[in-house]
Image 1 (tube, rainbow over the protein chains, first blue to last red):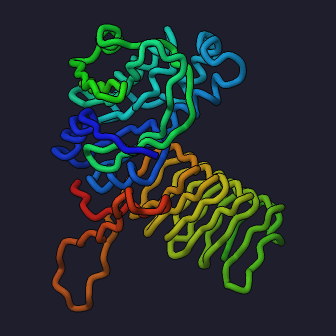
Image 2: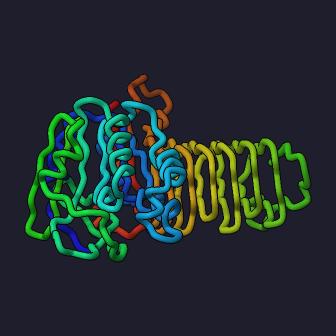
Image 3: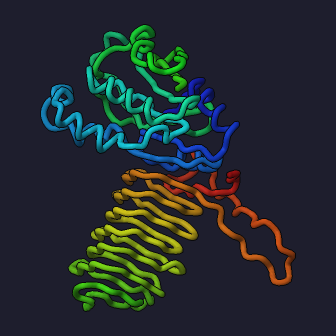
Length: 193
Length: 161
């Protein structure tokens, strides 16, 4: 288990401190520290383990080939992202988008955009090592507004490498995209709906 | 405890502790109203109301019901919305899918939870003769995650809605 400072989280939390009583989505899987941090600020938290949902839908056989199966992709979207429009005031998606390929990734980002209220923030993380075949995955937990605890969950092959340009394209439907480059090969991205 | 099951009630037993236990082989469909603590090791489908008492869903327990209780401890599987007056404790290996309204929540590492958590302000009993006043929030019980055990309670000390 390790910790890291996060400017992206700090930016995300600026919204939370200003406005209590928000509805937030955390896709890291339920954990005590994030739940305690967010609920003590007076927010509602919707929690799910997005990676686990991916493994359930696409885990048997080739993970990325399965994502191209329309039936499986549809099943995944309905089980993992079946929320009303503009339901959330913020979303913590962490590094989960790195493990979605092609059309499914676009569908997921589209759903996230639809679920978020205008003006809300979403925090996503992307590894910046272009040649890495596998990247470490973690359960991300908020320790305080500037610190994340990383609990290792093994390594995975990412669907693709994202640079700033591809991220801007991915989040083109959002109002703004802000990058925080870090020393540890992790690109923090805050997008504003 | 009173219950309105469709089927066998013989698996209900009252342990020496005073807790009612629904055994592993028991299947209940319907409404459970309890005036004592209840442990479910079998299967329940319906609704469970025991607002002054504690519900424990045991390791082998499978509950598909909306639950209202003072305190809920989940070790097995629970599908349904949960409302507690005091706290919910989701232990490792537990699986809970549903929305939670509670004053305090504890989630152990390894537990699976999908749903919404709404921390509600608990009413503090007014002392006799006290002048009417806005109810005060419970003190938060959260401590620093860096130093706390995985089973640390999230409190509702500073809710401002």
